[in-house]
Structures are given as structure tokens and as C-alpha cells.
Length: 282
Image 1 (cartoon, rainbow, N blue to C red):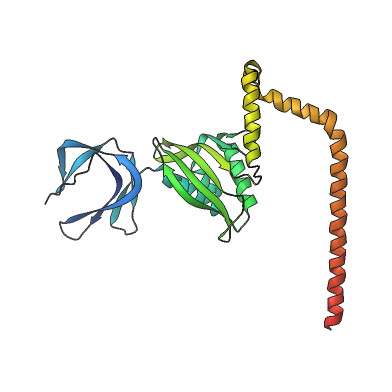
Image 2 (tube, rainbow, N blue to C red):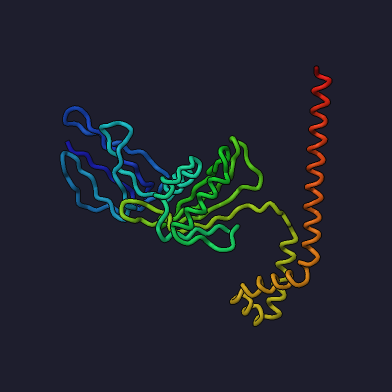
């Protein structure tokens, strides 16, 4: 017996599972996923082994994977959201080898907390390894939302948790661009923006207003500075070294020494208190 399945012009991508039964019958199960896919009907039908299915066009590439049971095969479309979820799962599980399989050789990973992006698979993996080490045993990424775009792109909101509790000032959002290389979907570009612990509030708007006013008054100087942003950082560094460093460094050194002395003093007082408690507890 033949079966015919019709799809609308634009529908959610379906996860198709062909499950063999004893005898001549075949059941076709359809499980919806969150991945959108544009489907186009062709008038011709393909009939093979008693199944007639309208051909699909303009759909994301898919792959065959085994299902939970031994007699099932699932057709799962490539999905950037699935790749990103697996990426964070590898970080949480500290699985460096499995994480490496999701990174493209020419990956560009830009974390806005760092002055420049990490270029190439080697630099990216070194950064991710340091990240996993810094997270320790109990800190995990918690994925809040994943929004998938066109051409294997995805955006994600996340935060860090320690034993299921939210860690303050660790909310962030990341944007990923993946590429299909062979039979694998790999991360090619990434940009990570993390919540700042400093909340200046309206001061930022005031500074922005002053800067835009200066830019409008001196457009040529603004264009020169925008074309050479490193000039500003070099100038500020030299100014700090010449004028501020001779005064700031002794102050910082004295401040650090003072807190080291206080810490030692508190440690000594704590040890004395413990010994006194031991004497009275006998």
C-alpha cells in the first residue's frame, strides 16, 4: 500500500522516523522540531517499496542517525541550534576532545572581554581549555534561549550557575555562524558579549552626548581617530606612564601591603580565638 505526505509551502522542519514492522507494513512517524525550513512541493511523486512521498526542495541538508531502538532510522536536518547546544554541553562536561570536533579550522572566536579575537582552531581551543579550567567543578553554563536564523546562524542567551544557583553578573549573549564541512556542522565565527559588573547608568548617556557633540564639531579629527583607534590607546598609555605611574604605583604598592598586613593580623587573631575555644571546651 502506498502513502502520500503533503507539506505546506513553509512549515516547521520535521523529524522523520521510519520504523520497520513485522510484515509488509511501514509506519511513518513525524516529530516536530524547532527548526524552520522552507519546503516546496513538486508535482511528481516518487514511489518506492510501497511508499509515495512528494519530493522536497529548498530544505536544509539532513543526515541519517540511529534512533533509540535498533529498528529505527531518523532523518535529522542539520541545525545550528543543535550544534550550539552540544558546544555548551561539552564545556559543562569538560569534554575537550568532543568540543574540538565542533570547531572549524579557520574559526574566529571574538570575546568582547578580550582586546582581540582568537584566530584559528588552535587559539580558540586554548582559550576554551582555559575557560573550562577557570569554571572549576561546579560552575556550569545554563542556556536560556536559542534563536536560529538563516544560513546556519544562531543567537543564544545564557548565564553561569554554581550548583544550580545563578552567579551574579554572568549573563551573556553569543552569536554563532556555522558552516557545513562534509557531514559535520562546525562553528566558524562566534561573538560573545558578557554583562558588565559596573553599572554606570545615566553617566554613559552623558558621556555619549559629549562625545557625539565633539565629533560633530570636529568631523575631520573624528574620522582620523576612527581610522586609527590604536593611536588613542598608545597616547593614553604613554600619558599614564609619564605622568600618573610615578604616583599611582607607590600608592597601589602601599595599599596592597596594607591589606596583606591586615590579612595576616586577622589570621593570627583567628588562630588565637580557636586556641582559646579549645582550652574552654576541655
